[in-house]
Image (cartoon, rainbow, N blue to C red; front, top):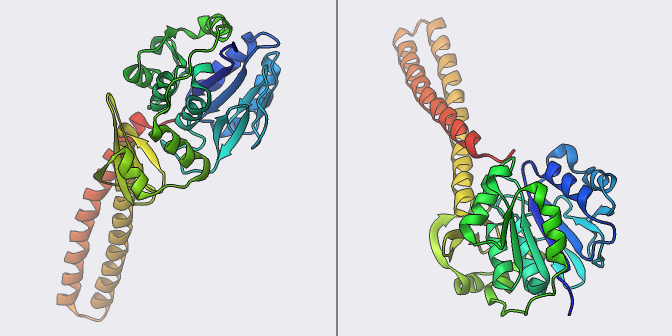
Length: 335
């Protein structure tokens, strides 16, 4: 019987340091393939493979489409593609963003659950918001083991906390104790393959190819009153107990929390457009006021002055609304 030879790790804010530590502690010849999706800060997008390779015995590379998975290697999801596991190969998915990210953690976890959940150990590390919470549920459904970094130990506890709110993990552990635990879990025999939900197959296909459709969405969710923040299409509500997600027929997907933030961002953009239009109207009213004054038309000048003052008050209301919206978004935005 094979061992649990797929180690799937998801991380976001603070994840570079956490991954650097894990890479430094992995033993040579680790009997598992390590697949990693991380929301990368821009300064690490082209260097993380070198950083992890230099910090430990396992070679780390950004994955190539169709590449064969090998034990003792670390495969990173490249910017702009979902990292998907398909038995002994990697696929780079061209599907839409999930949780406002590509690569996103949930698609990677779902793909590992679909192909080899009983051989998978899923790990959620530090990060903001809730990417990965739906994916660990899929891994657990399909017979995999779940390890979550202790939120009190994480640089950013929101992502581990979201995972804990979604599943009862097999282990909650501080980063320092994680390497020894993962080595022990990887050595365990693979579990019994579990029945795979049809919805899981469909969502992995969306991440892989971007192909979706309304009839399929009707089978896995119910239509909501919300519009997709990306494409403005209809969104379906996917009720998974403690977690509510939204997905449109194009394929964009959001947790409820991220959906709220995306709506806030759209509102801010709409307010910005309204503010620009008002500023242009104010400038035009001032110009027309001056022209009326220069030509001795006092009544017309006064009318344009009153219009400019009224529009200025409206603009200040919108500016104040934008400031408040930005303050709220800044509290929750992913670094």
